[in-house]
Structures are given as C-alpha cells and as structure tokens.
Amino acid sequence: FATSVAKKTSKQGIIAALYGMRDRPRRDIILGLVDYPIMMVIGELDNVLPFEQLLEQSQTIRNKMILYLEHDGHFGFLESPLQSNKALRKFLRNCS
Image (tube, rainbow, N blue to C red; front, top):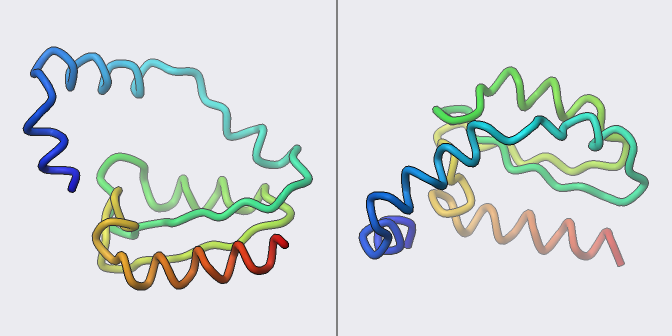
C-alpha cells in the first residue's frame, strides 16, 4: 500500500512531506496531559523515530495500550496487519 501511494506521489510532494515532518514542533508533551485512551504502535526497527524515544514518550501516557512489534519499522501497522488489527480491535473494545 505505502509503495503504491509513494509511486503516485511527485518527488517534490515526497520531499515537502518529509521536510514538514522533520520541521514540525514536537507535541509529545501533550501525551501526558490528555485523559482519553491512546494506542501506540511501536516498531523496534523504526528508522524514523528511535525506539528508545518512543518508549520514553509512552511513559508519559496515563491511559495507554502499546503494541510492540519487534520485527517491524515505522509502518508496523502495514508490516504486521493481522497483529495490528487484533490489537486495534481490543483497544476499541476497551474504549467503549
């Protein structure tokens, strides 16, 4: 899926999106302030967001569910769709 989307996106569009993600201000402080449930999908092989940084961010969340994917990267939900969907269904059941 991600590959097909990338192939349809212009080179300039991809570059602009990457710069936008790189240059946006960090908002992780908000994670510790919210009262609603948050689900994080963390790929241990993520080459965009360091695994240790994601673990640190997760510690600030009060009401959380974390799916650790030890063999996946930044798109773990695409790399392990069955495991991700199962976890998402569980998370949504717990939210209702």
